[in-house]
Amino acid sequence: MKKLFNYNYRVLVALALSLSFFACDGDNDGTGGEVEEPPITNDATAVAFVKGIVKSVSLGSGGSFTIETLSEGTISFEGDDTADGPLISLFDVQPNNAYVESSLWNRHTGVIAQANDAIEQISALQDSVVANAATGKVLSTANKNLALGGAYFARGLAYFYLVQIFGEVPIYTSTENASNGVPESVDKVYQQAERDFKKAEELLPVNTGTKTYPNKYAAQAILSKAYLTWSTVTSRDNANTPVTADAAKLANAVTYADKVISSAAYQLEEDFLKTQAGRNYKFGKEHILNFSYVLGDARPGDGGNHQSHCAFSYGFDADPNTEPTHIGPASYDLYTKWDNANVHNELDQRREFSYTTHLAKPGSGKTPDEDSVYVFNPTTGWLPIFGKGIDRTYYEGPLVGPTERDLDRLEIRYAEVLLIKAEALIESNQNLSDAKGLINTVRRRAYQVGEFAVGNGNGLTPADIEVTANDQVGLRAALRQERKNEFVYEQKRWLDLIRWHNLTETVLTVQQYPEYTGTHTPGSFFEKAKKHLQTRVAAVKANPLRYYRLPIPDAARATNPNLVLDKYYQ
Image (spheres, one colour):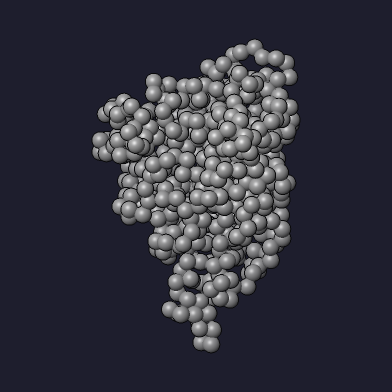
């Protein structure tokens, strides 16, 4: 049978990774252009090829943009309202949307094709403890396992994203007959991802020397998350109805989270700003897996993470009415009512970092202490900006972020593993005191109390901020609030709401925002925000089940007649 990798992958890469250097839909991660099937002949070529696959599996800039915007918390003004980003913000998602096509469908199906080729090539090569081309054993066993483990991990993560976003998709595990596949059930796609993550866990070492290539613990962490997500899968028609989670899958989620926790390889950062993987902090003790968006060692000026550009698109002196950020928070309430309006919320170090209202402009004063502080709130015509898109790990970061963007995307960090375990325990209604303790550990770090107190503390005690609920209902609400607090602008919210089956009811809460109800100056930033909020409310009221999935793109269905457009988009 003819191998279909070359043709299919060139097409997929050309579609998925076509870029515009300063736009959020530009997935400039160094993998663009036509890619020929590479000859894998030794350790160096095997590992290098798979490193490229692993970097490609991250949500592309347009993909992260889409995942971030489909919730109650984000709006987009990248272009006029007919552009792909604003259309998603308006909840007008069509199967020809370029973000959905290139950054979600093509990117992940392309990764699968490339991973299949790598697995076949590398598996066919002989190995020994020390590579010896003279004997035909051209790979060392360690590097063969490293490369194969990375390829299995990338394929598993691609399937994990595809099944969450699109539902039923074809499964390809070979370069033979790798086109026109028939979509498999959601359970079968999860089973394939499970097999791939377990194979990655088996092959990968505990330390790969970098946070941007998966190790054994990354495979365990993502597998734990996959089990948790899989546990709540229901029929498409019941997407909006809470379900009783599958007990066996919840138990597996706990087991794999415990593997990461018991390894003692990771810790929570005391300073929440260090959860960011910026230019000068790429190897934080909380980081499990990050994606750098670039293949080479050169970082500044190469495009990097477009999430950074889009969060602060035009810098300090932009006019919000004519140059709004490409993506930003949907309401000032997200800041003022932070942490469910906790009375101490101004002391939660996550609040200002997540929804930045005050930012010093580097070089605007004689010394850094004298730099001008810009205000981003309704008094200056702005909403807060997503502070996690602004590199705080070096002084000039806020000034050059819109162009250099040397900020890695966080795939998973240790705080999420703690909350995955907590959620699995809560949904299984077992060991609720342990779940409560895990949530409160994350909260103590956020408020810098207890073991995370700095100096003489901030006047709070753990009792001031810890969760007090003891029952499943109360702890479920606390867990969901904590994930909302912890992972702002980390591309978790839409996927969380899908897993919890409460996307529609959550989106409808925007009706409580002052931006939704207020009267605003015609043509102003706030009038545009009101339109986006009102339009998405009308959209979910008209079709409450639609937005639990995205439509398989027109181009993909034209290529493969076995693919079907989701019925809620017909």
